[in-house]
Image (cartoon, rainbow, N blue to C red; front, side, top):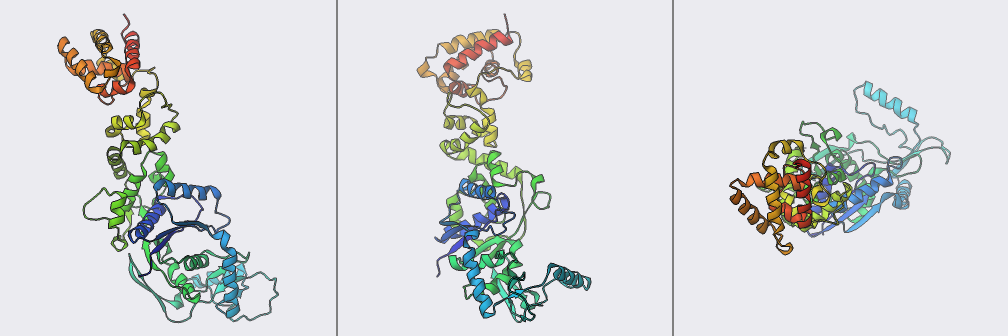
Length: 470
């Protein structure tokens, strides 16, 4: 069996969106499952719309997702000499021909065909090479598509596809400005790079028969194909910005872990039993492209947020912390003085759907409390609370620095509540407000451990003074 070699070949006319990321993931998984090779290729032949920022964003997105490539990135704009060399050979032996039709003639032809209810297509006017044309007269180059027979291929997702050659016209393979076109460059790249399996979006299905004829004309092996369905919004419309984030790095910015996004994307059209959570190793082991659904999938941000929370809770805290660091810096939180980020993750994991939320919740661990939640103050700071804070401060001050851990702190507060004959809530909630400024936090014992002994005692004293002046 020929070694499997797949490729992901985005056009850098915009950022990498989730549909492209899923296609990249499927292509990557197929190569990894078969111990093959995965190629990254940048198809930048659209010189007007391709941009360097888009190229940088695609590479950054792939790196963030962890979809490492074995070869590349290759750039089509650096291979123009190769494309033109082959086009010139095809011109010489009749597999291609020069077309001198003006844009005006082509537009008139299109209008006439549409008026007759026909499918617009080039009529082969220049196929015979007739007419007297000067060497510098503007022209493009067209591929001479076969006139008879059919093109057949088996799609690993959609099954057998067949189309008559009479339905296909002669594609332009080199523009009037001398630049080669997408459909030709793709074929040459796949041939030169030895691509065995092409996994791409369903919007390329119509290109495939045309490209197959070019593969054959070049004497190249025809790869196997799998065309993945599109992703829809939860309202059934094509996924767009109005459904929320669509670019991969926007999901990073919104606080999603790459592992969670990959797991969610792989389940948009593929699955193995009723399982929801798949590690990357599981995906590689179980992935089968023929089990991908040919129906469109609906993107559910709520489900993604649920999955992200599962990963925040289950991944090693050190791994989550490595991603959290970006959000801390992004929100301007100086985490150099305060708890280590893995400890913060352990404390906040169950309370966070995203890392952006986690960072926003964490300020009181690193910054002084200067404001208090009015609703929490109204509910919990009452007559008698001053005594609670005073006695809590005295009790906590007796806990030695080396013993300042959640279990010891919990024991001390529990004993205090017993001595005062009140519930733990009437001790813990005023302390929570004093130490965090909020009515919600992890357990007050865990919170005080992470805030630290000196800071905790300082904050209790300050809250006593500001909230319950004598």
